[in-house]
Length: 437
Image 1 (cartoon, rainbow, N blue to C red):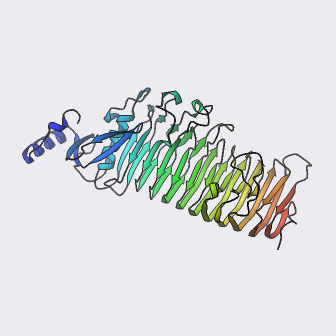
Image 2: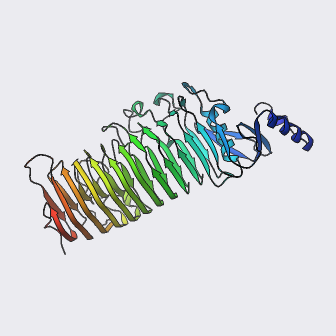
Image 3: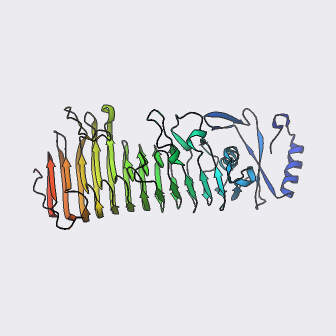
C-alpha cells in the first residue's frame, strides 16, 4: 500500500474493516516496525517512528503467520532488463523480512531480467529464516550508470540470519564494463554476506562480477552447493568465493571458472570444508593471502577433498605476505585431480600481492604447519609440480603422500623444490627429496 501513509492513523475498528476487505480481495496484511534500506548509498525510510501496514499479493489467505510466497512483480518490478527494479526489490524485501511465523519465500520469477542497482538488504528479520528463490535473471547496471565508483558490493546482505538463496536463475554482475577502469575505481563484489549466520546458497549461476563474485564475511554456519560461477580467465580479481572471518563453512558440488582464485580462504577462518569443486580457469583454491600490511591472521582446520583443477594457474596454494604474523595450520588437500594445472602444490611465503617479483624476507612471517597433500593425480603445466617456498622460520609438519603428477607435455621431466620446508614424503612422483626432517 503506497501513497499517503503519514495520514493513515487507523483505529481498531478501521484496522479490522480494512483487514477484512483486503483478505476478501486475496491480499494479506501484516504489521511491520521500523526499517531502513538503502539504494546507491542513500537511505530510504519505511515506517520510521510509527506502526504501518504492508501489503503483499499471495495465494494464501492466512494472516500474520504461516508460509507466505511473495512475487517481486507484485511490488512493482518490471523485469524487462531496462527498468530499474531496485525499489521494487527493496519493498519486497521489507515484506519478506518483516513476515512473522514460518519461513516466507520471495520469488524472482523465470523468463524475466531484473535490472537492480546497488542495494543493501538489512536484517535482522522477524522470522528465524527467510527464503529468496531466484528463477529469473538479476543484472547489474553498466559501470557508467553507477553514481561514482567507490562501492564494496552490489547486492549486499547484512545481519540476515537463516537466509536461503537458491533457484535456477542467474546473477550477472555486468563486469566487462568495469574491468578496464583505472585502479583508483573500487569495483564492487557482486554478492556480499556480512554477519549472516546459517546461510545457504544453492543452484544459481553467477556471471561476470566486477570484482569477487561471492564474499562471505563474519558468518557462522554456511552451506554453498551446486553453484556455477564464471568469468573470463583474464578478468581481474574475479574470485569465485572469498571467505573471511567465518567458521563452519561447507562448499560442495560446484563449478568455478574465473580470472582469480576459485576459492580464497582468508584470515579468521576455521572449519572450512570444500568437496567436489571443479576449478578452472582461475588461480586455484588458496589459503590467503595472509599478513598483508603486517596483519596478524589465523586460519585453521581447512579441508579440501575430491576437487579438480583444470587449466588453472595454481592448484592447492597457501600464500602469505612477509611481515605478517599468526598461523595457517591443520590444512589438508586430498584426492585432487589435475588437468594441466600450473603449480599443483604450492606454498608461497614470499607472495607480493599479485606482483610477479618475490617479496623479500623481513624476518617476520605467518607460521605454516600441519599441511597434508594426499592423493594428487594428473598433469602439471609447468616444471615445478611441487614448490614449497617457506619463510626463514620454516614450514613444519608437511605431509606429501600418494602423489603422481606428470607433465602435460609428453616426456617433460618435473621436479619438486623446497625452501625451509620440514616434513615427510611417501610414494611421490616426482620424487620429493628436499624436505627437511
